[in-house]
Image 1 (tube, rainbow, N blue to C red):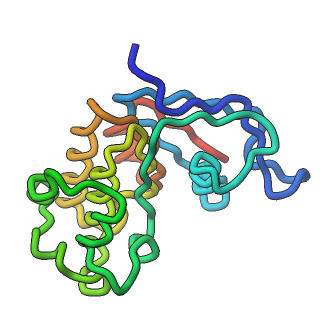
Image 2 (image 1 turned 180 degrees about the vertical axis):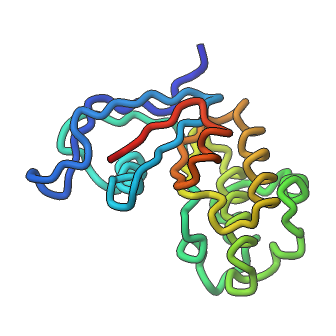
Length: 191
């Protein structure tokens, strides 16, 4: 039995008591699994990540999680504009193996010396994934991790993420139903 990296039990949360996003919601995620959250805008997908990260408090229930890192949907908001990508990665993670990981992701090593505004959205999203993986989490929260990437790079990055499942469990948000079916062990649909 693989290690549990996320355990949500009987979670209840809403921004008001009249409109609950979650009521008695439970989810278990183990190392080696990808669970994908699907749902329309406003259904609580990103709110779930905020709850898991501890940025919001549930009204009831519990969330237990292993060490985690996060890939945000908008990579521009997750990097400081005046520091190089390399410095920002080194601030939160070890850089051992960074070159090999760059090569596997199709991310030119020279881009590490640049500031966020000097990269395209797709390059910056790959830098975000690179940083998250170098943090060596047991749980990876991935909010639309490939939405800023073209189809070929999207496939390469998803193969890379799938290749990390010997070390992590991945909870992913996506609107891409085909992607979810391709890579997920389970799909949770929110309404």
